[in-house]
Image (cartoon, one colour):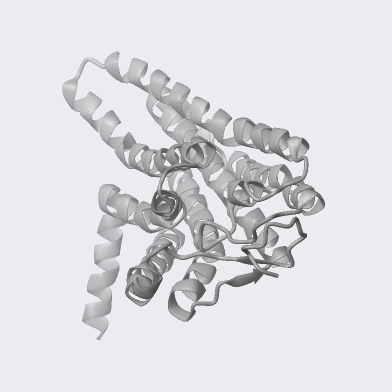
Length: 316
Protein backbone atom coordinates (compact mmCIF):
# COMPACT_ATOMS: atom_id res chain seq x y z
CA UNK A 1 0.00 0.00 0.00
CA UNK A 2 2.06 2.91 -1.19
CA UNK A 3 1.46 6.40 0.15
CA UNK A 4 2.27 7.74 -3.32
CA UNK A 5 -0.52 5.83 -5.01
CA UNK A 6 -3.15 8.11 -6.54
CA UNK A 7 -5.89 5.48 -6.41
CA UNK A 8 -8.48 5.78 -3.69
CA UNK A 9 -8.12 3.14 -0.98
CA UNK A 10 -9.10 2.46 2.61
CA UNK A 11 -5.86 2.49 4.60
CA UNK A 12 -5.06 0.00 7.35
CA UNK A 13 -2.17 2.11 8.63
CA UNK A 14 -1.07 5.74 8.68
CA UNK A 15 2.49 7.04 8.38
CA UNK A 16 3.54 9.47 11.12
CA UNK A 17 6.00 12.22 10.26
CA UNK A 18 8.56 13.87 12.52
CA UNK A 19 10.00 17.03 10.94
CA UNK A 20 9.70 17.00 7.13
CA UNK A 21 13.05 17.46 5.43
CA UNK A 22 15.01 17.02 8.65
CA UNK A 23 14.71 13.25 9.03
CA UNK A 24 18.49 12.87 9.33
CA UNK A 25 18.51 15.23 12.31
CA UNK A 26 15.76 13.37 14.22
CA UNK A 27 18.24 11.83 16.64
CA UNK A 28 19.25 15.34 17.76
CA UNK A 29 15.68 16.58 17.91
CA UNK A 30 14.72 13.57 20.03
CA UNK A 31 16.69 14.90 23.02
CA UNK A 32 14.65 18.12 23.52
CA UNK A 33 11.43 16.21 22.77
CA UNK A 34 12.24 13.65 25.47
CA UNK A 35 13.36 16.38 27.86
CA UNK A 36 10.04 18.16 27.33
CA UNK A 37 8.19 14.94 28.20
CA UNK A 38 10.29 14.41 31.35
CA UNK A 39 9.75 18.04 32.46
CA UNK A 40 6.00 17.59 31.92
CA UNK A 41 5.88 14.44 34.06
CA UNK A 42 8.09 15.83 36.85
CA UNK A 43 6.45 19.27 36.91
CA UNK A 44 2.84 18.11 37.01
CA UNK A 45 3.50 15.21 39.40
CA UNK A 46 5.33 17.63 41.74
CA UNK A 47 2.38 20.01 41.66
CA UNK A 48 -0.06 17.20 42.45
CA UNK A 49 2.17 15.90 45.28
CA UNK A 50 2.59 19.36 46.87
CA UNK A 51 -1.14 20.16 46.68
CA UNK A 52 -2.15 16.74 48.04
CA UNK A 53 0.35 16.73 50.91
CA UNK A 54 -0.31 20.29 52.12
CA UNK A 55 -3.72 20.70 53.77
CA UNK A 56 -3.49 24.49 53.48
CA UNK A 57 -3.58 24.06 49.68
CA UNK A 58 -6.86 22.14 49.70
CA UNK A 59 -8.66 25.27 48.49
CA UNK A 60 -10.74 25.67 45.30
CA UNK A 61 -7.97 27.44 43.38
CA UNK A 62 -5.49 24.62 44.01
CA UNK A 63 -8.02 21.88 43.35
CA UNK A 64 -8.63 23.40 39.90
CA UNK A 65 -4.85 23.58 39.47
CA UNK A 66 -4.72 19.85 40.26
CA UNK A 67 -7.31 19.24 37.54
CA UNK A 68 -5.14 21.22 35.11
CA UNK A 69 -2.10 19.11 36.05
CA UNK A 70 -4.05 15.87 35.47
CA UNK A 71 -5.26 17.00 32.03
CA UNK A 72 -1.72 18.12 31.15
CA UNK A 73 -0.40 14.68 32.12
CA UNK A 74 -3.12 12.98 30.10
CA UNK A 75 -2.50 15.13 27.02
CA UNK A 76 1.26 14.59 27.23
CA UNK A 77 0.97 10.82 27.71
CA UNK A 78 -1.28 10.59 24.65
CA UNK A 79 1.07 12.55 22.34
CA UNK A 80 4.65 11.97 23.54
CA UNK A 81 4.93 8.14 23.11
CA UNK A 82 4.43 8.29 19.32
CA UNK A 83 6.61 11.41 19.11
CA UNK A 84 9.43 9.59 20.93
CA UNK A 85 8.90 6.47 18.78
CA UNK A 86 9.22 8.49 15.57
CA UNK A 87 12.22 10.57 16.64
CA UNK A 88 14.18 7.91 18.54
CA UNK A 89 13.36 4.71 16.67
CA UNK A 90 11.98 5.93 13.31
CA UNK A 91 8.82 3.91 14.07
CA UNK A 92 6.45 5.80 11.80
CA UNK A 93 3.67 3.30 11.07
CA UNK A 94 0.51 3.26 13.19
CA UNK A 95 -2.67 1.22 12.75
CA UNK A 96 -5.72 3.27 11.75
CA UNK A 97 -7.63 2.06 14.82
CA UNK A 98 -4.77 3.11 17.13
CA UNK A 99 -4.49 6.45 15.34
CA UNK A 100 -8.21 7.15 15.76
CA UNK A 101 -7.97 6.17 19.44
CA UNK A 102 -5.02 8.51 19.96
CA UNK A 103 -6.88 11.28 18.15
CA UNK A 104 -9.90 10.72 20.44
CA UNK A 105 -7.86 11.04 23.63
CA UNK A 106 -5.80 14.00 22.41
CA UNK A 107 -8.89 16.03 21.52
CA UNK A 108 -10.79 14.88 24.63
CA UNK A 109 -7.97 16.02 26.91
CA UNK A 110 -7.69 19.29 24.94
CA UNK A 111 -11.38 19.99 25.55
CA UNK A 112 -10.97 19.02 29.23
CA UNK A 113 -8.03 21.43 29.55
CA UNK A 114 -10.05 24.21 27.94
CA UNK A 115 -12.90 23.47 30.38
CA UNK A 116 -10.52 23.55 33.36
CA UNK A 117 -9.15 26.92 32.23
CA UNK A 118 -12.72 28.24 32.07
CA UNK A 119 -13.40 26.87 35.59
CA UNK A 120 -10.21 28.57 36.82
CA UNK A 121 -11.36 31.86 35.28
CA UNK A 122 -14.67 31.46 37.15
CA UNK A 123 -12.68 30.80 40.34
CA UNK A 124 -10.68 34.02 39.88
CA UNK A 125 -13.89 35.94 39.09
CA UNK A 126 -15.54 34.81 42.34
CA UNK A 127 -12.36 35.37 44.40
CA UNK A 128 -11.96 38.97 43.18
CA UNK A 129 -15.53 40.13 42.51
CA UNK A 130 -17.32 38.34 45.35
CA UNK A 131 -14.66 37.30 47.90
CA UNK A 132 -17.03 37.12 50.89
CA UNK A 133 -19.05 34.33 49.23
CA UNK A 134 -16.03 32.53 47.71
CA UNK A 135 -16.05 29.49 50.00
CA UNK A 136 -19.84 29.28 50.11
CA UNK A 137 -20.12 29.25 46.29
CA UNK A 138 -17.18 26.97 45.50
CA UNK A 139 -17.92 24.19 47.98
CA UNK A 140 -16.36 20.73 47.73
CA UNK A 141 -19.54 19.28 46.20
CA UNK A 142 -19.72 22.06 43.58
CA UNK A 143 -16.07 21.54 42.62
CA UNK A 144 -16.61 17.77 42.38
CA UNK A 145 -19.61 18.31 40.08
CA UNK A 146 -17.57 20.70 37.91
CA UNK A 147 -14.80 18.10 37.65
CA UNK A 148 -17.23 15.33 36.64
CA UNK A 149 -18.90 17.65 34.10
CA UNK A 150 -15.49 18.49 32.58
CA UNK A 151 -14.64 14.81 32.07
CA UNK A 152 -18.06 13.89 30.67
CA UNK A 153 -18.07 16.88 28.34
CA UNK A 154 -14.63 16.05 26.93
CA UNK A 155 -15.53 12.41 26.28
CA UNK A 156 -19.09 12.84 24.97
CA UNK A 157 -18.30 15.66 22.52
CA UNK A 158 -15.39 13.82 20.85
CA UNK A 159 -16.85 10.29 21.05
CA UNK A 160 -18.71 10.31 17.67
CA UNK A 161 -15.77 11.72 15.67
CA UNK A 162 -13.63 8.54 15.31
CA UNK A 163 -16.69 6.56 14.17
CA UNK A 164 -17.64 9.22 11.61
CA UNK A 165 -14.06 9.29 10.31
CA UNK A 166 -13.85 5.50 10.13
CA UNK A 167 -17.08 5.42 8.11
CA UNK A 168 -15.82 7.86 5.47
CA UNK A 169 -12.12 6.95 5.53
CA UNK A 170 -11.06 6.53 1.90
CA UNK A 171 -7.83 8.27 0.90
CA UNK A 172 -5.27 8.84 -1.84
CA UNK A 173 -2.58 9.24 0.79
CA UNK A 174 -1.87 7.75 4.20
CA UNK A 175 0.97 10.07 5.29
CA UNK A 176 0.08 12.38 8.18
CA UNK A 177 1.68 15.76 8.88
CA UNK A 178 2.71 15.15 12.50
CA UNK A 179 4.12 12.52 14.85
CA UNK A 180 0.66 12.08 16.38
CA UNK A 181 -2.89 11.86 15.07
CA UNK A 182 -5.05 14.98 14.84
CA UNK A 183 -8.56 15.29 13.45
CA UNK A 184 -7.89 18.12 10.94
CA UNK A 185 -4.87 16.21 9.63
CA UNK A 186 -6.85 13.01 8.99
CA UNK A 187 -9.77 14.98 7.55
CA UNK A 188 -7.53 16.48 4.84
CA UNK A 189 -6.92 12.99 3.45
CA UNK A 190 -10.57 11.88 3.27
CA UNK A 191 -11.71 11.67 -0.35
CA UNK A 192 -15.37 10.73 0.20
CA UNK A 193 -18.15 13.11 1.20
CA UNK A 194 -17.42 14.17 4.78
CA UNK A 195 -19.87 17.05 5.22
CA UNK A 196 -21.39 15.47 8.35
CA UNK A 197 -17.96 15.10 9.91
CA UNK A 198 -16.99 18.68 9.03
CA UNK A 199 -20.21 20.13 10.45
CA UNK A 200 -20.00 18.08 13.63
CA UNK A 201 -16.32 18.89 14.21
CA UNK A 202 -17.10 22.60 13.77
CA UNK A 203 -19.96 22.27 16.27
CA UNK A 204 -17.63 20.44 18.70
CA UNK A 205 -14.99 23.18 18.55
CA UNK A 206 -17.44 26.10 18.84
CA UNK A 207 -19.50 24.51 21.65
CA UNK A 208 -16.41 23.72 23.73
CA UNK A 209 -13.24 25.74 23.16
CA UNK A 210 -15.05 28.59 21.43
CA UNK A 211 -17.59 28.88 24.27
CA UNK A 212 -14.86 28.47 26.90
CA UNK A 213 -12.76 31.25 25.36
CA UNK A 214 -15.77 33.60 25.34
CA UNK A 215 -16.53 32.80 29.01
CA UNK A 216 -12.89 33.39 29.97
CA UNK A 217 -12.91 36.77 28.18
CA UNK A 218 -16.20 37.71 29.86
CA UNK A 219 -14.81 36.70 33.27
CA UNK A 220 -11.80 38.96 32.82
CA UNK A 221 -13.95 41.85 31.62
CA UNK A 222 -15.91 41.55 34.87
CA UNK A 223 -12.68 41.20 36.86
CA UNK A 224 -11.23 44.35 35.25
CA UNK A 225 -14.40 46.31 36.06
CA UNK A 226 -14.17 45.17 39.67
CA UNK A 227 -10.43 45.85 39.95
CA UNK A 228 -10.65 49.38 38.54
CA UNK A 229 -13.36 50.06 41.10
CA UNK A 230 -10.82 49.49 43.88
CA UNK A 231 -9.39 52.77 45.18
CA UNK A 232 -6.08 51.42 46.49
CA UNK A 233 -3.32 50.93 43.90
CA UNK A 234 -1.80 48.24 46.12
CA UNK A 235 -5.06 46.30 46.18
CA UNK A 236 -5.36 46.61 42.40
CA UNK A 237 -1.86 45.21 41.97
CA UNK A 238 -2.64 42.34 44.36
CA UNK A 239 -5.83 41.50 42.42
CA UNK A 240 -4.01 41.57 39.06
CA UNK A 241 -1.16 39.48 40.45
CA UNK A 242 -3.66 36.78 41.47
CA UNK A 243 -4.58 36.38 37.79
CA UNK A 244 -1.16 36.56 36.11
CA UNK A 245 -0.46 32.79 36.20
CA UNK A 246 -3.88 31.94 34.77
CA UNK A 247 -3.59 34.56 32.01
CA UNK A 248 -0.17 33.16 30.98
CA UNK A 249 -1.52 29.60 30.87
CA UNK A 250 -4.57 30.69 28.84
CA UNK A 251 -2.35 32.47 26.29
CA UNK A 252 -0.03 29.43 26.04
CA UNK A 253 -3.04 27.19 25.36
CA UNK A 254 -5.30 29.26 23.09
CA UNK A 255 -2.63 31.21 21.16
CA UNK A 256 -0.97 28.25 19.40
CA UNK A 257 -4.35 26.49 19.07
CA UNK A 258 -5.85 29.39 17.10
CA UNK A 259 -2.77 29.67 14.88
CA UNK A 260 -2.72 25.88 14.31
CA UNK A 261 -6.42 25.91 13.33
CA UNK A 262 -5.79 28.75 10.86
CA UNK A 263 -2.76 26.92 9.42
CA UNK A 264 -4.77 23.71 8.91
CA UNK A 265 -7.66 25.65 7.35
CA UNK A 266 -5.91 28.18 5.13
CA UNK A 267 -2.21 27.30 5.11
CA UNK A 268 -2.04 24.77 2.29
CA UNK A 269 0.75 26.74 0.61
CA UNK A 270 2.75 27.20 3.80
CA UNK A 271 5.85 25.15 4.54
CA UNK A 272 5.11 21.82 6.29
CA UNK A 273 7.54 22.98 8.98
CA UNK A 274 4.99 25.63 10.04
CA UNK A 275 2.29 22.96 10.49
CA UNK A 276 4.63 20.73 12.50
CA UNK A 277 6.06 23.53 14.65
CA UNK A 278 2.63 24.90 15.62
CA UNK A 279 1.30 21.40 16.43
CA UNK A 280 4.26 20.69 18.72
CA UNK A 281 3.97 24.14 20.26
CA UNK A 282 0.28 23.62 21.05
CA UNK A 283 0.25 20.01 22.26
CA UNK A 284 3.71 19.52 23.82
CA UNK A 285 4.76 22.88 25.26
CA UNK A 286 1.83 23.95 27.52
CA UNK A 287 1.83 20.74 29.63
CA UNK A 288 5.54 21.35 30.36
CA UNK A 289 5.27 25.12 30.91
CA UNK A 290 2.06 25.25 33.01
CA UNK A 291 3.50 23.70 36.21
CA UNK A 292 6.59 25.91 35.88
CA UNK A 293 4.45 29.05 35.59
CA UNK A 294 2.32 28.13 38.61
CA UNK A 295 5.31 26.83 40.56
CA UNK A 296 7.18 30.13 40.17
CA UNK A 297 4.31 32.64 40.22
CA UNK A 298 2.22 31.08 43.02
CA UNK A 299 4.00 32.02 46.25
CA UNK A 300 2.34 29.34 48.39
CA UNK A 301 3.40 26.53 46.01
CA UNK A 302 6.89 27.97 45.49
CA UNK A 303 7.53 28.13 49.24
CA UNK A 304 6.39 24.56 49.78
CA UNK A 305 8.53 23.24 46.93
CA UNK A 306 11.58 24.96 48.46
CA UNK A 307 10.67 23.53 51.88
CA UNK A 308 10.41 19.99 50.46
CA UNK A 309 13.77 20.37 48.71
CA UNK A 310 15.36 21.64 51.93
CA UNK A 311 13.85 18.77 53.95
CA UNK A 312 15.23 16.22 51.48
CA UNK A 313 18.72 17.75 51.72
CA UNK A 314 18.62 17.68 55.54
CA UNK A 315 17.41 14.05 55.59
CA UNK A 316 20.26 13.00 53.28
